[in-house]
Amino acid sequence: MLNKKIMGLTAGVAAIATLGACTTDGVTGERRISTEAGIGAAVGTVLGYLAGDIIGGKNDRTAKIIGAGVGAVAGGAVGSYMDKQEQEMRRQTAGTGVEVIRDGDDLLLRMPSGITFDTNQAVVKPQFQDTLNQVAQTMVNYPSTYIDVMGHTDSTGSDSYNQQLSQRRAQAVANYLAQRGVQPQRMATVGYGESQLLYNPDNTEAEREANRRVEIKVVPVTQDDVQTYGY
Image (cartoon, one colour):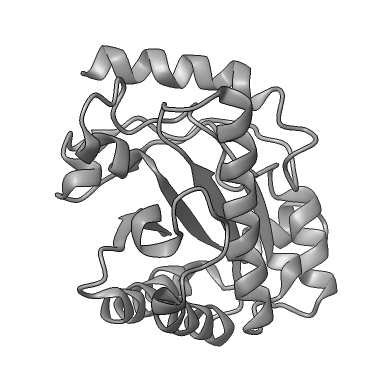
């Protein structure tokens, strides 16, 4: 299984290189994300997204965020700042099927498409909007974060269709968050299509369902970021 995942992620590098027209920013770096138990993370540790700590790196994003009046978090306060958000998001998403994953000081919300979108659609389901409203409010209450919204599909269907669908869904979630007061300058979107499968191959419906997902990554804006890029 691990070798298959490595192959899937390697193939994803080539796919990511073609995303320029479909993404808000480019993609760089490498990441490792630990996962919790559950059908979308039954393998334990998932090799990381090839997305760096945020989509496209922090330079341009930091400038936009600081320009929008968002402050940075002092180094010693980062852990507590993210702890509070994690607790709120776990409470808000309890029982909904959304996974909240902690990776150091970063948070990842993994949302199966079955609860967020109808088949082949990119409009957030009405029954999921209340949960997303609460998540958005937490993001508003804790503004010193970068927010990446990432769309994924299963391996069925054509590569081009899956790419477009994953991007449209990521953008739909980002637009929804913006409508609820989350500053657009904090957000970037990317569609990975089928390039980053949790299960590869996805031979069962349960595996395909786990692969169809939108993920929101929340990364703190720190004073180190501001000093590093001179803002």
